[in-house]
Each structure stands twice: as structure tokens, then as C-alpha cells.
Image (cartoon, rainbow, N blue to C red; front, side, top):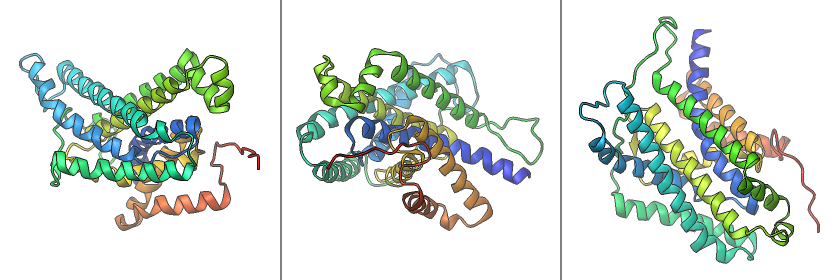
Length: 313
């Protein structure tokens, strides 16, 4: 029982990361009805942005701040790294949408899909040119401490709690933006009928750019939170491929286009992956995502929380 609870905690922590990345996929699909396969590489850029931003943040922290022990200074520094990395990737998402996807908006979806794969490959090899091919160690921005009092066998770290808390906070902010703000109302209107939204005075270009920026910011948050969750975190220009694919599977599992579905799919996939590692073999941890994708496409193509859509032919 203790082992099951331990794997469950680890799986939820990993699933929170997948959920944040999956939200970017599902928001873009909800608005434009295409999959941005470059999203996983935006996650990679977010990790490198956090790595390069961290030393500058630590220089401006109050003297005596130490990443090896928890304090309000270190917590503030970690939050600053998170926020700045999200800002960098938000700008990157807007630039990609403006320069690459917007000119192809009226083209067939297959054209946009192939272009998305091209953008993904470009970001990977440009990252290799810019950052180097060798893996780099992400700096420790929060100390890894175990919460005591849970028993000798059950381990819950402070960093896992931070990941849960920040993920819930980001989800709450996202729900507020989508459900309670004018730009969120415009996003929902655009997802239902772009032509009618435009006729009602909504600037579709601004809404789509905002959607790309918001999804890219969440991918950066996932990268930094993953580094917090795993202190000895190695990053490289091709690190976004597998997380991007798994997050896409999570979005499909939950129902592509559904924000709650992306969260549910990410958590389920994270738990399944850790259970496979804990009770089976680590060799199959990556295969489980593809098995889930095949199963969901065979038995419930709309996903767990997705809804069927009628298409005119």
C-alpha cells in the first residue's frame, strides 16, 4: 500500500507537468483546429531560458540568499525565474504565430501541420547551434527537502508540494482568464465560430496571438517546475520531443480542445507512467503513452471529456 501511494504521488507530480504542456496543445486546437507540434520545443526553450536567467536572478537577491536552504528570498528567486521564463516563451509563441502560422491560416490543415513539424525541427537544431549539443545541468533554484511525519516509507518532498501548488495556481489563473475576462470570452467565441466572432468586432489576430502566447507560457512553466521537481535535471536541445508527444497524448486522452480534459489526461498519463516503472520495467515508461494513444483512438476517439463534433461535407 505504501508503495502504491508513493507511486501515486510521483505520478501526480509528473502528470501536473504533462497537464501544463497539454493545455497549450488543446488551447491552440480549440481556436485554430490544428496541432502545434512545435509546442514541445517551446518547452525546451523555456528550460534553457530558466537556466540562463537563474544566475542573473540570484545576483539581485538579498545578500545571504542560498539555494541550498529554503527561505523567502529563494522562493522569490524561484518565482522570478518561473515568471521570466514564461514571459520569454510567451513572446516566442507570439512570434511563431505571427511569422509562421498566420500567413498559412487559409491554407489546408495538412500544410499547417507539415509547417508545424518544420518549426519543431528548426527550433531543435537552432537550439543545438545556440546552446550547444552537450546536455547541461539546470541550476538548483529550490532546495530538495523531504516532508517529515509521513512515515519512514512514504516520501513527499517540498519540491513536489511546490509543483502541485504552482500548477493549481496556474490552472486557476487560466480558468479565470478563459471564463471571466473579455479576452477569454473572445477565445471561446472564436473557437465556436471564427466568422461570427469577427463580425461581432473581435480581432481574431489578437485573440489567436494571445492564445499562442498563453500556451507557450504554460509550457515554460512546466519546464521550470520539472527542474524544481528533479534537482539533478539535465537539459538539451532535443529534450522537448518526448514530453511534447506525451503531452499531446494527454490532450487526446482527455479530449482535444477541452481544458479540463487536458488536465485529467495529463494526470492519468503521469500516474500510468510511474505505475509502469514501479510495478513493471522502466523500459516501458515511454511506450505506455503510445499504447494509451492507440487505445483511446480505437475505443473513444473524442477523449474522456471531449465532445463529438459534426462536420459538414
